[in-house]
Length: 147
Image 1 (cartoon, helix red, strand yellow):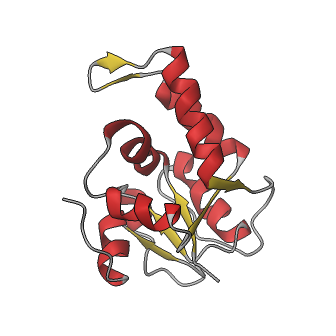
Image 2: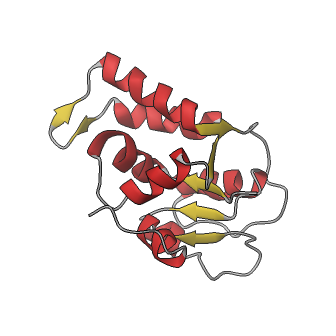
């Protein structure tokens, strides 16, 4: 069974908007079915809100925002919102707690982020999934860089 991943909002932006070279290998792995991605309505809502902000000094039009959400929904399994199935440490940034809870509920093996507050929890006890950068995931799994 392929590993399940949770991506934080900035990783989704790198995938959907910025075509970050560090994300390309991850995107390819998901498209090939070698990994799955989980998301919930709370995280989709945050993504939709952030897509409406000016990104890199340019706002996305409503059609482009809708396209990004459609792509996200096409590649991710939407997990029911609710409480986590286990006790998790509290994230320094309360806005990021939802990603920990989603990874726990989805029984994900990896939470991929570039966020300092989330990455700081990588070695805390009580977390049943790995927290790392997308590049770290690619390196750990021998996935060739798309740079």
